[in-house]
Length: 194
Image 1 (tube, one colour):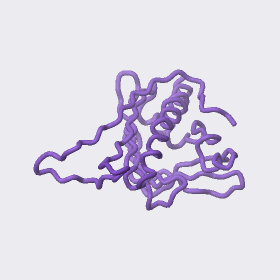
Image 2 (tube, rainbow, N blue to C red):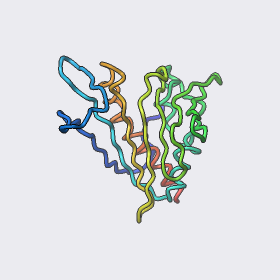
Image 3 (cartoon, rainbow, N blue to C red):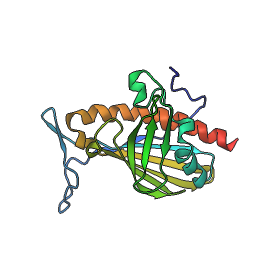
Image 4 (cartoon, rainbow, N blue to C red):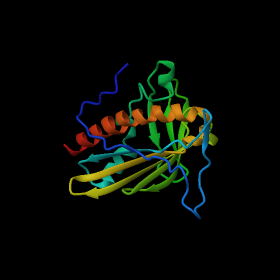
């Protein structure tokens, strides 16, 4: 199996939002908290940011149309869980479209459903790779132009709905996005810009 090294140097400006322990007076809490190990704990969203040397429309295109060229299918796919590398992954370019893995035997598996498709600006989807769609977490990606190209911000939220497993799943994605977004995606953008 190939490792996650995508042959680039990279910088990830990742932060984790800390939950507010008490709501402000008069403000209703919007999310139901997770009860974890006897304490009231909300699972914080994962936030990652990367800088790429492309215009927002090109950065969006690399993330969506070219996803099969940079996504590490040999380590980050349903097929990888069975020791195989997926044939491909594709994004159906529309609201309601799917992100779909094609497995080695030609069968397919949905990873996500697109909820916002604004080329060059925003992409959002309900992410349920390997789970029932009712257990989806939410991923929001924005593409903002700046003097050096585009800042790409990713927020992965909704781990509370996964119950006691949500904390461990969020921890896995916290480091997983560093490699997938911070290494593989950034490397693909750098190759496109060269």
